[in-house]
Length: 355
Image 1 (cartoon, one colour):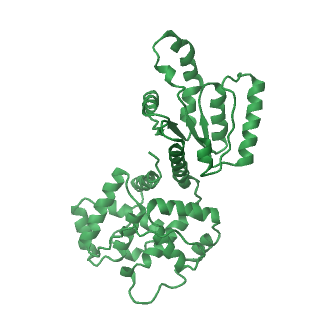
Image 2 (spheres, helix red, strand yellow):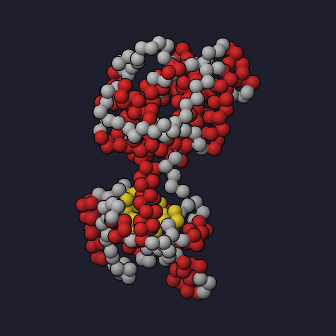
Image 3 (tube, rainbow, N blue to C red):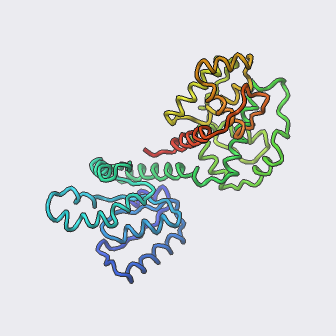
């Protein structure tokens, strides 16, 4: 299996005896070997198999404490907990209580080799949701499943590693792309070159290649790479995002269309399915709304959306710099607004979810 994975990506294999004694000298030697190998290779993913002894639990702890993404596979070593004899309580339960259970919770993700092992892990730890990789398949199929799991796990954790400059840059690109929309052009003239403030230009200028790669991962997961590519062309940047035309932007320029979008946004927030393209649609709808603001507020109040709309306007004001002239009501920034921000963040993180 390692040979099949090695054909698609770089792999370093470290083996240790399953019956390693838990003496201080052997554990210190193992720790030095593990840490030296980690810092020599600097892997994106550390995949650990088995939980037969205390050394495995310590390896998971050492890798996680140093910031490495750790995937853990019990590899059938938890099946003994299902046996109904006295040996279960004398031998296996002390292992589960002392280090095996802690190992499951320390890992970034868990890969089970069968549905029965996945069900056992869920029964032992209700909050864990393992990834199932069928061990009965061929080595090539197993390698493909592992590569998909590895890449998705890296993308899912991309957002956690993003700096404040990267998050601000994404919204700068989105705002420029939204302002380039045909419905926002009052004339045939292109957008001015100074469409970014001096502070925003400085943020974009100091982005490194690694930071742009992380922004690309978010753009691909949220299907906004095409919009970010338009923004980089407008700013004459040398970085091109992978263009995809899967983004659907609603441009309803009447108050009824805006009310429908507000309803959909609230429903998607409750289901944790809110996306960045929907945020852009609200931004465009507010800037192109061709209706009386008083009548719009009255319709929002009848639909019980006035408070939600005022909080979304506050979020649009701080993320996409929505000007006060396009706000039909005063923005509201309170504790519920902060909850909406957290829901939007969870919805974006859900697009990176493996399971």
